[in-house]
Length: 173
Image (spheres, rainbow, N blue to C red):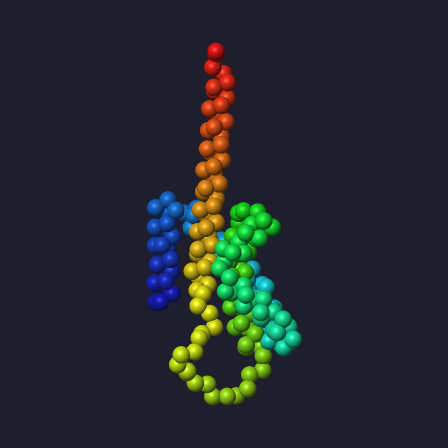
């Protein structure tokens, strides 16, 4: 029953995207998210297992990933854009880098041998992270789309200027 309701809801959402003319954008977003999650899992799972099994590797990789976690995602978008250009490549890699720390942290703690100790909740202690990975990935996709739209607008404006200059050159004196 629950599966049928979820299937119906998914069909209604997909239909609404098509009815609103957002089908291409929604498919693009879905494919970017799928690629980003796949990339982060493909890198994060082996990294997390290795970090859980090797204390030396964990000591090396933890500060790097902690630094990546506290730096805003758009701060390392620029090197990704420089290396991979603008487009799906950068849009896939940047969110994947943003959540890499979380994947490694979860797997690293599970892969390491854990002693049997009683845990307790402590008041006033800071949690691991205050960054919401889903929000950051959504913001990165939004930034990438905005950049693409502005780039297309500038290209169109340049073509209009070129056309105007050509028409002015054809006017008899």
